[in-house]
Length: 569
Picture 1 (cartoon, rainbow, N blue to C red):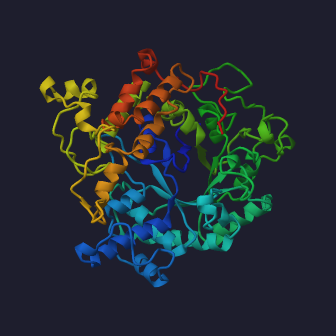
Picture 2: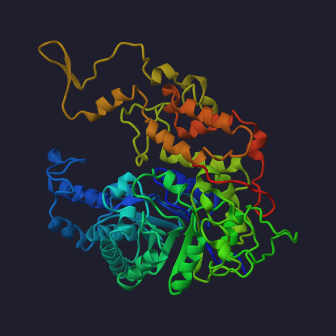
Picture 3: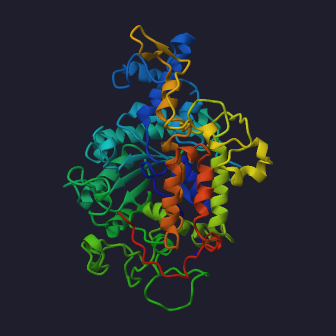
């Protein structure tokens, strides 16, 4: 069998699958399908409604964060009016909340799938139109997340119990996707002109006490017959709505691959992705293609055990019905009785596999996806230094330094307008930027001139006024002055720096210097005199704490090494 016939997906992870994480991952692999974190459809409707409301108000009365009524109290006719508009105005605010990012240089976001969470057919239809207009390659409905953020609002895993609502939502998405393909030929990032936006559903094999094969089969059957959905992503474990945290729901319920393979056999007209417990690229490829399938790049060693630690002795198992595949599985000998045995020959409607914590905890393992999983001649990055330098270049564009400008606004999101700097660099980032910017000693600005000394007396801002009792009062609505005082002179807020650094936390997993790198990154990010130099500088400085040999070491290739990695909690 030729490589490239299956797909490798990076799962949606709340607070992980940010724009920064997806760009960092895209530097490692051009072929993998990367998912956004779940986008709440109600949020997109609300942001669009704010935009339309502000357009109707005089400039002095406009508000960027409030409406006369909240989304939950707005009439259904208002929601319908937004949904039925001929053209959606794709503002920067709407693009940001939809999680889209444009190509940077030769780094393209494609292929990318947007996952939404919703309990309303109207709102999900609107979100589908926004996703199509942004240019995503596909859209997915979350029917498996147990987080309190979604379960308490009756979507996510709750839709497995409320199947009527799930069918209505998916049906609305399928109809809207079909209509969008003819009404909107292109989007800002669309490379599939006039192509129908695929719709999929990500779910688990059971919920609470409803964990029989008949339950999940009936759920899929209704989505196929009544909603017209034929693409599914199955997380191969059940979910508990009560009693377990979201983290525990990723570890405590046992994984049951045989049930997923049985589901594939029951619905040959549908395509499936399998998610959960992928230990390595070697394990993922064996699950996707089958353990008996041989490729040209495999060693002719004749070993019976795969490098992933999963037994290949699955003779005669093509459908998951053998006795040794019953969960709890005694053969796999894994925690909770999980069964992760790959099939000897993968079902033809198994479209691919999906990994989550492998990508988060050991991103360097993804460096060989294009070659090992898709059969490409080479991979995008040859070592960690090349990867980090390209990522730092990206951060310098989206989160530029704020150490040498007179603008008192704070960097709360991606910077869309150029920052005007008064000096080439400061004393802190001189080594990083001095040569590039051609700075001389007379052009360098000292850190004390950038960030106010914490011990210095508070200066009364022009936006403050003194009342009759002598106490300073701020003018109502002067958010900029209050925000600057809140962060004590640090213009780039901690949340932005953490989000930019998070994708790199596992890049040295298994290598010397991992803890030193993370500790240095954290310490620099909390230093208010350093934070204004930007997250790009922080990463560059943290890299100095680790030996050059580690950064210059070529990425290891899959198939020729032993991996005993298990996803962490």
